[in-house]
Length: 110
Ligand SMILES: [Zn+2]
Image (cartoon, rainbow, N blue to C red; front, side, top):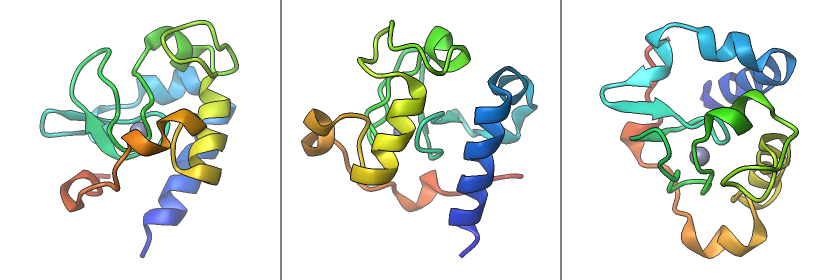
């Protein structure tokens, strides 16, 4: 599957230039859901909703200041992405709260 490669590419693109990432067109939106900035699945329904797959809370400040942990999430976006990669949730305490992505959350229009 291409999914993993795509995720890794997106991950590094965000690290290099998060502002440009957010300026990208609507390819990152599927129906009424946005792509989670942390895990990359289409799970985000609202401006401060919590992703059920990784438990990142969408936050414009933390998503444009990717190494800042001052916000609704206790860890920075960079830490959250590392944690999601290594243990499947943004923080160890949230592992019990997350679920695997559904099939319809994997689809990308890119
Ligand atoms: Zn997520």
